[in-house]
Image (cartoon, rainbow, N blue to C red; front, side):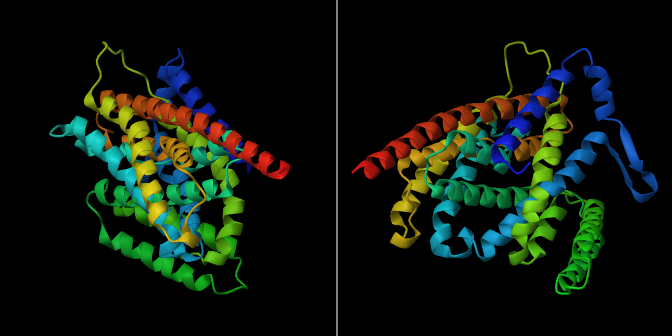
Length: 378
């Protein structure tokens, strides 16, 4: 449950299963279940099964992202400007270039709302593929990918909060802030059963954020950011196995479970933009800016990575998957045809990027293994 490799394989397996079932003879019955509403109407919580998964279950994944972000911003790679320069500039390239490619295909159309879809990086999947194929690469490769993906998640969180939120109810956000402030104080009292308090805070903040109109996954990030940095590692160790084996696979299963429409040989500009932006935009944007940033960084902040290493990691960062699928659902929830094309484009674009990243990571890993053997022999 703690293995990056297992998490990546399970995520992909769940996605494939969801796509197969949705387009099988069982598809209509399953899709009826996916879009059926359950919950507590008196509390304003009557949601479809799909929304329970994307709003509540995925919030636990964003809690882990918030915890990792808190650690990196406080004592990790992103805590010092000198060490943060390379992953942050690389992250900027990994967001801007894919967005520009998508925009080039969709400028002036009603589909511009989907520009953030190819900007996301799936942390769990990217780290899993690196663990499988990147054996032998320097440890700084994983550190760089993790910092890059965390910065990317921060951008994704801001995009969701700003561009996919309408009609915000300030009183509910104020309620969430009060609960978070109370939890900040609770973290200082060692005699409290703090893990139970964290669960209660998570539920209350999630409910308040959901009622405010802001996407409820932001609640997980908010809680992660107020927990002291010294406690984040142990919490990630406890929560991440469950997000890797339950939250992310279940989300992928439901998000990819769409009935693919009959295509007449032509696709919209949304499909073309996402399919090209994920692999090409990520690889070009991250590789170039990471290489330039590493060259201009101070000697102590410089990563022991070469241009092909950055290209390999950029390929893995092009696996948008989880957050890209979430953004596709937020952008095109009212257009079934375009949502199906966007989902298929995310899958194809991620697979292309993954294939390139996995191939080059394996090649670079073998290069470093051979290099170490030659050094030891001498």
